[in-house]
Image: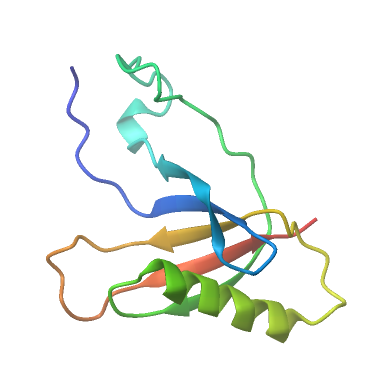
Length: 117
């Protein structure tokens, strides 16, 4: 019953399939605004969970435009190639992040994050 507005980034946890595409299961995460951080409102929908994301070190790449699934998959591949075999990161998931509202046509920001192990 409490409106919080939209926050950025909208973060989608993608789980790569063996062929590199994303599996059908995804997890969408929204940041709770600062003034709700200490005492977030309780969700009325059982499918919505409040989670605290621990601090992390990430490897990231950024790109523009209206991001689609294939854009995230392609940039994840580019980031993987750039990191090579020396970097240790979680390979069973990565974050796909969008920072802009749908009505912003130019200067859009999207990122792929790999979480360092």
